[in-house]
Image (cartoon, rainbow, N blue to C red):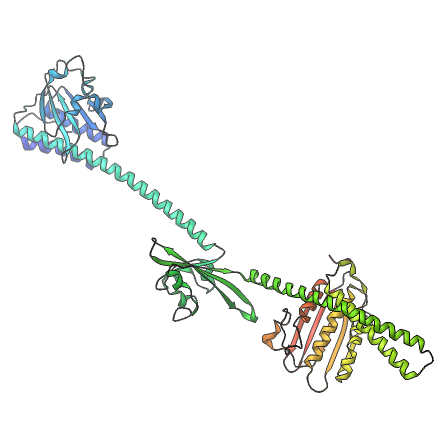
Length: 547
């Protein structure tokens, strides 16, 4: 630091003190070092016994920080006290003043002058630290040699004290700026972390979600929705939803977004078709996003895959229909049983009474008995199919016999149609664990469908059985009209039929598929329109109770 002479070279003295202040700031000195060095230089210029630095606390203006300068450019005393305890602090103004020191030497010493050893105090020079009339504190000089009436030196002192005030204010401002920057960085980190959390949540919502404005511009979109068009979200944001997501040049015909902009949430369904007539059933919900109670500037769109739910509901409805039809069938079959029993019983009585009678009459009665027994068997099978089968109804069954019995039950129609049938039944096929009545129903249904597919001329129906790799293989082949490709995946759906009204219920293949599934098997279809159809049934060989 510079030694400051006590002379009249005002410009030189001013430059030396200000240089000291500037050097401390340029050297990035901490606030305490800057204060002690600059105050020491000013103290030498004033030539005083004691120098006190008072600073009103920036965080708590009711608190005063007091520092008393020592001999070795240090603070020999650092303390604080409340402004309300000091009449001296309450009287500090923006003007530099010289006070009579005797007023502060009484028995009740002001906190400003605690720890002062100069005695007596003859005079006290007060130089306020002020910025734009805001008092930051003051420099207090006890018994200064300084000539207060020398306006030039007084002006110099006022300038350097203002420089110190500016330095203190700037340091505090810089400190607050650093704290603010730290808080801002922390806030930015929290925002970034929240954004990442929200983005992760947004992208992993099970539903497809996107947000559009009044011009149908995509403002945000999650990964699940963008993946449906094989794009990344950033490739879609900024484009219109109808163009980027659906390939249209105008808003979608059944879009409900416009209703949402009027403040009304809306829901619609959309079926999206895939390859081989597969589909996804979407429930699309549009919800207005309100910036206030009146204006809606954006709409959020949720696409939820409800295919499984829709199928379950459809199956439930179909199951209820099947249950109703089953109950109806059981009631009808029960009512038919009584007249059938009468027909069979009377035919048997007549046969017993006509022993040795006319051969033609006896043959007719036998035909009536046989037809009645067959009808009774069909009714019995219908009753069994109408109720839920129990596992203990599975038994050792001859697969070939179930097919022969099914053929016999429908042989009359086959003969009337001049249909050629061939049965290649492997005699080595072992006994299978199954419900024979259910299987007979499946074979009758497949043969009946084959007869219906053969429309004109002589047709052929071929049936074969094989046993390979612990599996029963049954094949039904006809040379009928075949199945159209668009119908192939629907033939096992309940109530689906291509027959004319009144000629089919659409339940035969649906029930047949369920029976085969109950036997842990599968049905495959191979059909060529105009050439015929082949059904392949595979049933595993299980020698234990079906679980």
